[in-house]
Structures are given as structure tokens and as C-alpha cells.
Length: 219
Image (cartoon, rainbow, N blue to C red; front, side):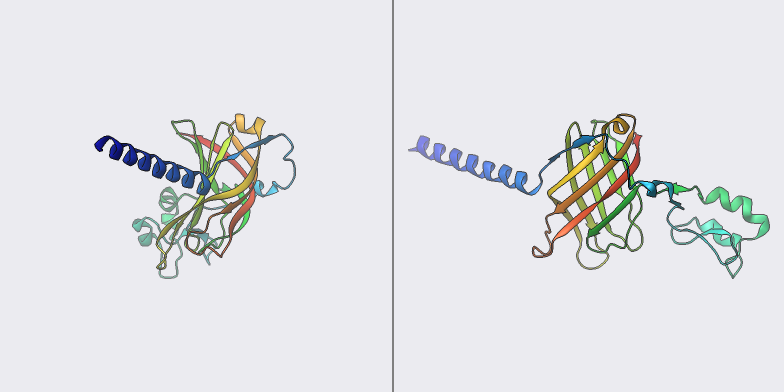
């Protein structure tokens, strides 16, 4: 009797385990990368550039910083925001005014999203190439792309500033084409079209599609 009960329990555990694996496969699939050398047009956005988040040109024509900035710069400006002439050199040692070239041109349907022109890819120690789009004061949905061998996985990380909390929208389906020669030389040049599972509102379809041109940073 005990042996029969043990066998029944074992079969139940195996069934539950199989269902768990099946659910994970359905809701978070990987897709096959389509390698190509034919991605020629539509990437002129990579010639455009901007400054890092918070850096802007003030009413005096000076590059200044607003938001998450070193506290020391406040003493270098007058009450109109003008940077004192004798503080300019010290100011720009604290504030990074490097031109950051656009690496993403896309459109989507996501929560709390006002747009971003940047995505950064890093090569992790396990060989995965991981990309993450940049958030800002009004964009709180980040596109995450993971590339390894011939497979791609993607999801959206949503960190709400309202009462929706932190959510992850897994990949439902999609396609991605990547220039193989450039990828092997350390650049992700790609066209993608992803659909995601909406874990907040099942009737509201979520998608993200566009083009990428981004260098791969090696850790």
C-alpha cells in the first residue's frame, strides 16, 4: 500500500513539473535570429545625437544640467541659471557633455512610455549579448533583448511610477533580423518586431518594433 501511494505521489509531482515547464515555454519563448547582410536602408538615425539625460542648453546658451546632477554645480550658477564665467571649466569637469549617438528608432504600445532613442548592449561573462533601452523621467518601460548563438529572447521591464508596481511582460512572438558581419565585429544592426504578453490587461495588446544600431560593450 505504501509503495502504491509513493508511486502515485511521484506521478503527480512529475505531472505538475511538466505543466510548469510547458507553461514557461509558452509564455516566454525564444525566437530564432534571422542572420542577413541585406539591412541597408533606414538606419540614418545613427547619425543623430543628443546629450546624456538631464543635460540641456539653458537660456544663456550654455550647456547645463537639471535633475540628477552633482550638488556642487548649484554654487556655480546665479539665480537665473547662468553659469559663472570663472566656474565654466570646473562645471564641465563635473558634467558629461559628450555627444551620445542614437542607437534605437522604434514604435510601441507600452505603459508610461514617451520615447527613447537609445539602447545599450553588453557582452556578459556567459557569452550572452544583453541590450536594454534607456528610460527617462517620462519613460518607464524598458526593452530587454538577449542574444546568444542563434537565439533571441526579449521582454519588457515596466517600473511604474503610479500604483501598477513592477511588471515583466514576456515575449509572445516576433522576429528579428541581424546583420551577421557587423555583429561579429561588435555591432548590433537589427530590425525587430515583437509582441508581448500583457500580464496587467489581457485584452490590451503590447508590441515593440523598430531598428537598432548599437555597439556591443564587453564587460
